[in-house]
Length: 195
Length: 195
DNA sequence: GTCTATATAATGATAGAC
DNA sequence: GTCTATCATTATATAGAC
Image (cartoon, rainbow over all chains, first blue to last red; front, top):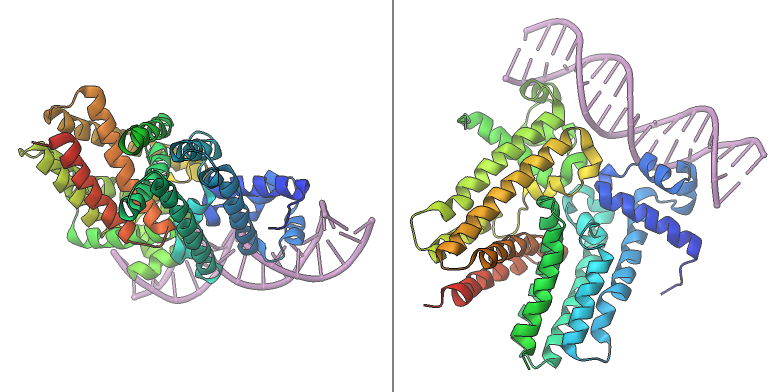
């Protein structure tokens, strides 16, 4: 995990926003240049491989970001229900309460569109989600659930978070996300941690 | 609701597949022409407004399709739990057990990318989902739930279905969708219809 | 590292023959 | 309705000066 210089980090964040808002093909170099304040040529200086290399690095950065802001909470030495609630709130922060979208979800949407560099990305994302699902599952096991039930509960958390994000967009209603996360917190406490 | 001639319907289905697989900007006229077996010029004969007009009609067609295959089940004169299960199975069929994706979700992902014709679409989709959420909600009310609880249950069904679709793609694991729908059916029976 | 200028390919879109 | 041929525009990408 190489540390990212602050200037480069700002650049990466700006680029990520454009890809989230417009998708891979929709994010043209003109858009990316405008958003960063750089010229196209300067972008190619930073990313000689063009959009392909850009998104590869952005995905790695996003995975680290999600790990720090969201899933890291599952490894903390606290009660499992606290870990889960912190994780869910972390995801809410990461998505700005459901208003922002996740780069991983955006780039996974159309695998057939850019097979060349896309396949490696899909594998990376898939593998990372396996890790996160396992961390969630382990958290539920620590709470006393049997392996199979824990795995199902973990699936449900992931489905609900990404589902609420998607549906909030479909319905143009950010509250869909915020109420879904609130309800998820409650349901976890009720179903798995009623002391 | 004007009936669609069979030949046009085949055309529409082929175009829809391309937009689902590649997104709005990723679906170039070259791709669309190849997939339909027509030339670009012929596509412009059918859709003088180009991709903008195309997707507008495809969205309308998709809404009708979803209404027939999925949400129509909620209006049937059966027990509410049967209606709900049929609806969920209808969604599973519509997405080919989670392997296909939904055009509405795909085109809603990047609202900023094509504001011109895009805004009208967003309103259409948003309005349609309001109607569907209401139909779901009414079904839960028929089962004896109070309005607020029924609304929450309806939200949860939509979030789970679209969430499972999204996460199945992220994790490259179609079973995520099929197990999520199975679990949703069970949970509905248990939580809301335990006789 | 940044830029302007430019090369090259692909895009959406049209003209006009059949 | 379908096509080939073509247009103008925009896309990705590079060369080379500062």
